[in-house]
Amino acid sequence: MAKAVQIARSHRLDGIGEYYFSRRLREIGEIEAATGRQIVKLAMGSPDLPPHSSVIECLSKEAQRPDVHKYMSYQGEPILRKAFADWYKKWYHVDLDFKTEVYPLIGSKEGIMHICMTFLNPGDKVLVPNPGYPTYSAGVKLAGGVMVPYALNKETNFYPDFEAIEKAGLEGVKMMLVNYPNMPTGQIGSMELFEKIIDFGARHNILIVHDNPYSFIRNTAGPLSIMAVEGAKEVALELNSLSKGHSMAGWRVGVLVGKAEWLKDVMTFRSNMDSGMFYPIQAASATALSLGEEWFKELNAIYYGRERQAYELLEALGCRYRKHQAGLFIWAELPEGYEGDSFSFSDEVMEKTDVFLTPGGIFGSEGKNYIRITLCCPEELLKKATDKIKAAFGK
Image (tube, rainbow, N blue to C red; front, side):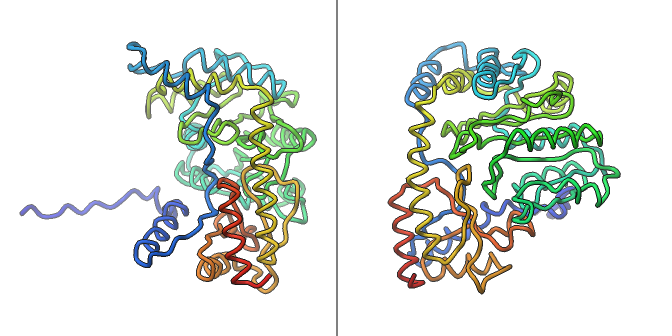
């Protein structure tokens, strides 16, 4: 028998753990298999609703064509790039050249990594929100960058405290990641906020990367884009996605918009990693982008119904929460007596009720006093979880 080869993994993975939900949901699956328990998982933001029927019909029709099963353009097909440009004009009032300022992605999550790999050199610093989407910090670290967290908390209304960020020092900072409507806090953005962010980036020569996948879900401000700020194309890039607002998470369709020169740089990196997405998916995505206001009204009516049930669940736990949060989740403070220990609270709730809630600590130290509940499940399931919690916690 040949001797086993000993291969050490790359140092770039040092400090990068398995994605929390990948690990935790596997563990919960093992618990269910071993005990027969059925855990209600109120964790990930994976939409359970289907896309509009016209989108599925378009996919099916286009997939029947014999000429669409080849490699597609690295830049994305014109049908999708123009659809994204028209969508930005209609909803965000942003003019984009679909030929040069729109770059489709296989989900916006990969765009975070591509941007980091394209623009960061080892040692470059990046301002990353705390709490924030874990992929932000992972992307920065994998690209050799240095993460510089900035706090989002009640005291700043979950907005960046630019004075505090400047006071802490900006030497070596090359990029800032921002996300409004915000995940996980649910805080809604505003044009005033985006103007401040663009001004900050321009004054300090910092590339702003705005992640904008939640602007159509439970957003009382309406869809907003940082690219609508005057001069934004000289300072910022924006990521967007069909995963949330169009219920197409598994389709993996996102987009990067901004300055043609910067998009070309990103394509230089990404073209060495993969090829263009399946044409029928691009054509069907163009159909999704053409949907009108009625689609979003119907979608949000469902999410607001779930929101009301989630409020009842949180009250049964003794958690405090802000109303008028945007996106697919509710961000809530831990009950009295549990402050600072979101992981233990999540474990206790699951042990007592067979309901899994996301501990806010996975999003950074500023999340240690919070839990997050997804609205990506039927209202009946939220009601079932609420009843279990009321029975166990007596509230």
